[in-house]
Image 1 (cartoon, rainbow, N blue to C red):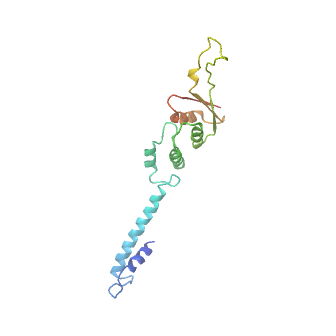
Image 2 (cartoon, helix red, strand yellow):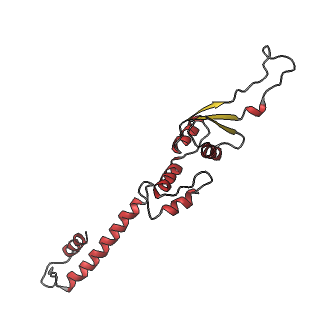
Image 3 (cartoon, rainbow, N blue to C red):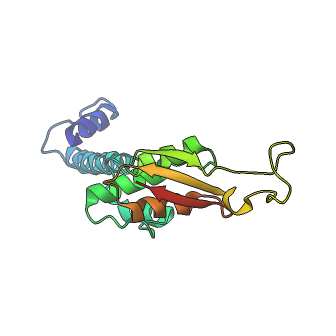
Length: 174
């Protein structure tokens, strides 16, 4: 690569006896030094481009983690591969309140879940009796995440609770 830069720089020189392209000439040595530096800069730029993608980042991994608030309460990765996966997972999250969002959030953490809402009963004229409660208010903000029996429940609850709305309660069932 440095030779390519040296050759390109030599081609920018005027033509004439004074502007020799011989390898022992001082001007060639100067252009070789510049070509070496341009090649070094190009290599560093290529390295920097790799740092933009979670799958290939290396030097800036700790900076990505700092910006994304990693490690967090739920997950403390130890290997570089786990750390990259945590960065990638965090970057993929867009936020949301729908069931699909929480299913995708669990999937990004490696879990397959389904979501059920706790049955919400409320007083209905004609089908409820006098004296029945107007509603089971405490349960209207509870939702149930159904997970595989082999799932680490504490970790899944942590991931979901960190993203859920403040007024809701998550129950993980296996």
